[in-house]
Image: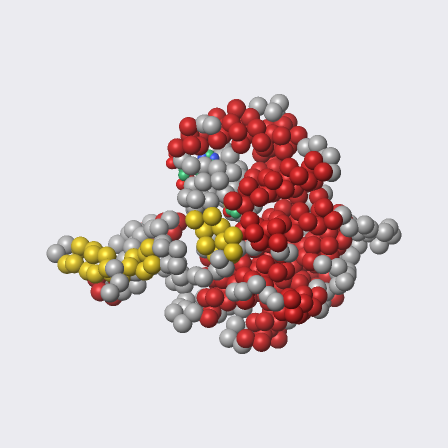
Length: 428
Ligand code: ACO
């Protein structure tokens, strides 16, 4: 018989089943709590609440471990390309050569955007944030591709998956081209995923464009380390929207909005703004760390801290290493990288950060690589969204295929006024 937890409520005792995961994580199953007692639980920010059981990503924040479908992120980062990792996340196993070829082929067939969609870009102000364009355009895919909207039809869902992964780089690159007034560059399907994206971003029709393989490798790695991170804010949003049986385009569009926030994916942009601010104010790292410790300043060290990691984020380790190698190999001196390393050193030896177990997260060094590649700052979070796409899709699929799927609908404890009588306007 499995372990039971006992809950004492007044003179009543309730037995609650304990669930154990494959890595010996434990949870108290409270699904019968309200029916049996009338009580609910409260957990603002879901700090202690598991929203689901999932077989996709394992994360041990105390020991800095991250695995997709059981494979350590460090192994995937050196052995795979992003499309292969996408297949792993979505279908649960590493593909055979034939499966991978077929998957690549299907993605290649869907890279183009419907021509009428380019008119959308004319409607956005030129200085619109590309994350706003991304979420709007992904949502608009559901108007152009109405043959892939039914979440209960496996073939439609499959088609929707190819469309999303294949079109996201095109949508993203178009938003950049629009912002700088250059013509859109169509995808070229003999190129791989990252090559194609870089070409659509940086090529112009009047000149030949040579794809830089160091940048392709760095981008590929960045996309892999962002590909999934279990029940984070944007993924939970994708699941929540999807739980109402909204289509996959709509669910992903909502996830993109959640990712945009500076406490989540938007932190990569905020980190570079912070580092530039430090540089422009004389490079005094210690002063900035002191400000971040002072609660009245409202300043936080962006790219530091994580809800789950209470150790060095393994993704940050990988990214810092790539950063080091890329900048050295290409001889790109970047004072921002130097300030970042200094900031990390000062923070990691400071009691405030030690006591709270605040370490660099995935966003701390990623922006330095994006800068080296030439990607503008407001596109950083867009790149995060491109990386996170297979994770969002895998989590959405897992939810839909779960026998226990229900609409996500939390409860609350009401703390407002008790019933009172309406007063007409002239008596208030
Ligand atoms: N700088 C200074 N202090 C911090 C920081 C930080 N970056 N992060 C947390 N703290 C402090 C808090 O003030 C709090 O201190 P207290 O106990 O004295 O009140 C303590 O550490 C715990 O912080 P919480 O905000 O309760 O932690 P939570 O888990 O809710 O938040 C979060 C995690 C949002 C990531 C937070 O660490 C943060 O704001 N970091 C900066 C933004 C950032 O880098 N976000 C990207 C995260 S990775 C991702 O989403 C892809």
